[in-house]
Image (tube, rainbow, N blue to C red):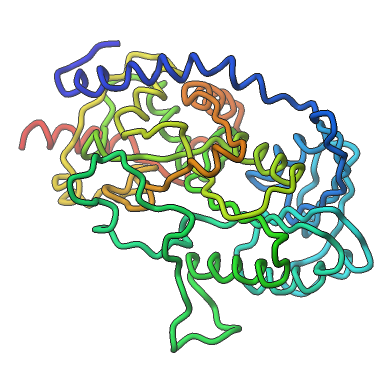
Length: 378
């Protein structure tokens, strides 16, 4: 890989990480699809199951010998045999769930707290464990809280007891709620309906094969193409992502073990900078890419949109500072970042031409060239 001076510092820092995560590949295989002895098969109800994180969750649960039912609107079908399909609508039709019994519910697609009010009401006496997939967006944190004085950039400061969004005096039950608040409200609803029988998982950015939002897919694709790549802002800024397979398989194991409590479902295993993420992706995709780091102020002048044009990048975002030690202690494991990148690229190459030409996020190549040229000529 050709390296200019602006790359070298980031590469030296990330090279050790690339070697470390590749060495972890053998440990990944330790988590197999074989259910441990002494763990009984369960009757699992998944609310959702055909979106981004659902298919692998279903596949993993079935492979481990669980009996799985999925509740969807019926617009998409799971291709996994042996799965019961229940059709309805979380807005107003949960009749297919009435009069049934399951061991555990995996609620992985609630975008509205009112959905959770309905599902917990219907399922309160139908199961003994409710696993709710929330989001770190439930945390109500200010940017300055992410940078404690005299602490290294890597130190996580958001744990499972950090402040969450609360409804204000001008809000009443039944009103629409923004994303962060609806997740916090949903968590409270589940805890109230299933006291002592609730597991809350708060993921951050979920990545990997199957993600059609292109919120992270952009980077493996762009780096594999090679050439000069615009790298945004401070290479030392923290970044957190988790492979959807690591997340979903862990959630199934939490259900198997009846592990209760609140958990941050974030990765990777160790703290990661933006530079380490980009070079880790390069380690999985190869190519002749070089990275040119462009100042955040300059990108702002050029109206570059964090997250949308530059996916997985919001400079100084406090939600990139979430601790995951409690989750690791509860069995969360991680694939090497290079493996996630390689698998994502392989999946992306199998997408339709139309889908790949009309990505939902990421900077257009012409705009990237224009900004890089302006940066050099400033």
